[in-house]
Image 1 (cartoon, helix red, strand yellow):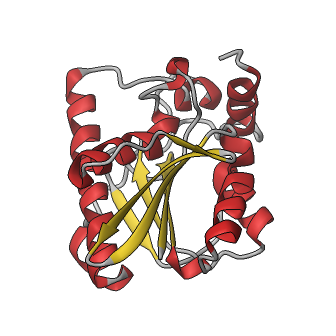
Image 2 (image 1 turned 180 degrees about the horizontal axis):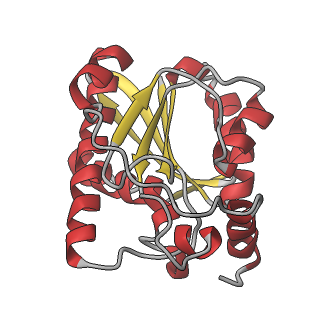
Length: 217
């Protein structure tokens, strides 16, 4: 059995923002699998399906990003799913927009949802798919950037292609394993983006997630 988790913040005000990559990839996956992730299960909305004879649970945590680990831990415990069968999809501000990165394990980095999952489950040994949303633009603070939507049709098109690629990577993982998904769908390293002139103050992404949780964004 597998658990596929898309991270994001619930509510229409956060729909299709950069921080809701996991929700948007899951929407593509729903269409490919012909299911609707809408059944209430504890802290999440879920759907069940089968891929190549394996039962798969799709989940969208409804806890807001900072508490994603509560939802993941609950589902892992209920279904008795080991960490290596839990795939998490989320946004990454440190890789170029449209880039897809797949890994079998690793640290949570600066992502608050992943930090929560690692803290609650006590392990980093689960696969993940990161989709780049780009570094903040000039004049943006990080909190506003991750809770913003794409600014141009071109940006949205890049994002949509990345979501499609990430959803295909999920299916490849389910059918042939994480190594095959990495080989087929990891984006080749593009040209490095220029970093912003100043490093963002510490805690800006945390502030964005706190604002989302409090409904103030």
